[in-house]
Length: 624
Image (cartoon, rainbow, N blue to C red; front, side, top):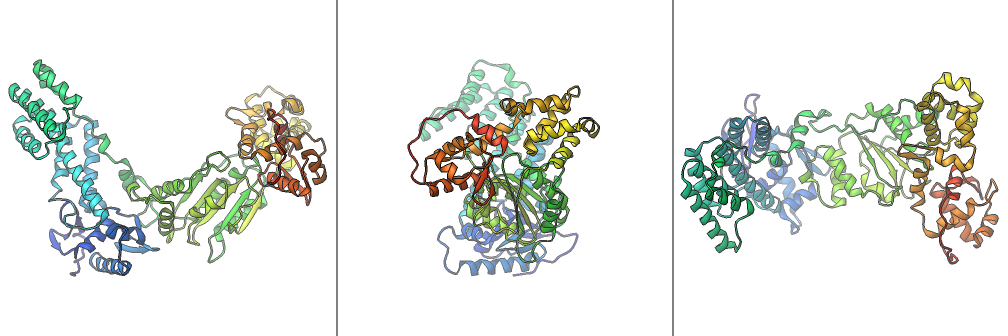
């Protein structure tokens, strides 16, 4: 294989809209045997994205790859790298990335021209639109990926061939709108002969002939279309073509007036332009995501824990992925803490930050495959290159992050099975997980941080940041009563503070008095769409029948501590069954383990459980 001469004035260019070729300064060099062309095409058409080895094997051989396929493929990659240079084709994990300016790949150049044509049409620059579409169509020099084997090439050959015909249709329709009948009528006559089942060009031809004063010929075009479609496919022309026929029959002179062709917006690919021109890069030409939710301006408390988690994420163990988990009951501030910590350390991760709500506390948790699809596109992988299966997406995700330092926030996880596919393999990355469960069995974490409620001083600090220190200072005793009535739960304190901030004429004591009445407490702790009740309800909906019944019965007890013996009596269960239920409610963060063997409710959870509507009586539970 010949080595391409390199020089700043002669960029390497690639063509796939015909035979696969590599060119420098107009001089074609060999692109190798068909299988090597298949590998090159798969990398070129996913320009800038990491393509894992398994995906390339499937692209070239499908499901019937020989035992030696991986060795053959690596040889092809080695030969391609010799040809284009190691600076363009790099190994990333178990995959490869070909980093080429899309301007130098004809298929991507087509997309740029289509995007520009759509913008020109939107701006009523119709002549410019026609010129750009003509330039795009001219980039084809035969059947795309001619002679290239493999399922990927077959799919792309069909896609690119259809795109070529569509662009030809659109360009001719634009020329009809510009009144270029002398040039476009012969083109349309030839095109309708070559593509007899596409109705759009028949319509453009009828409009052009009628506008050129050739009404009878326009009607004959409809007759030909009806005959071809009827004889070959057994169908009638569509409603648009029939409507056009009726207008020609009626001698509708508006057909000859200037008109706007159909929009090109559906052919534009905004994501491609954004990826090329608007995204920030991490130095390797790849997209640098910045997905963290905003940090809160009034964050308070947890100073020691914040410092500890920042140190772990920024420095971490030398050869292992640093994962920290933050758990606790609804409203305790897990997500707020995770985002605050992530913002403090994000500059240590030049590859960017990823953030996803896994919806683990909702009835339908987010599928990890869906989360991976979002991550991969955020990292610059084109949507068509994202594998359909979760396992393949996970492998590609790890490959993409192998040489990058990215921070991930996985918010509201349900269990370890949901998290594991989302973990990078590189120790340069770091992960923060939040969950309502007090443990994620099977997940290796560097630090597990179970969050409790605030102390009274931390609660008053948060309240003061929301309502103002001066106002708080005037009613310090009332403020302490208020946060105590909130159970020092950060969400409840924040809601109460927001209500006071919106009502500057209220005294703090007024709201404190209302919150001290348990009958009013939960209704008072509602502010717009955010309520304490809604937050608890998400955890409650995940309980099974026996857990729900136990929650209600235990909440009816007046004792501050719930001991297993008292619970067994209230539940009419054996000691072992009772302990299993108490532990399951603790894992769901609806009970607190005060000490080994003793449990208690947070006062707001107790109020929530007592306010639940009655259930139909159950039969006795045998096992949990």
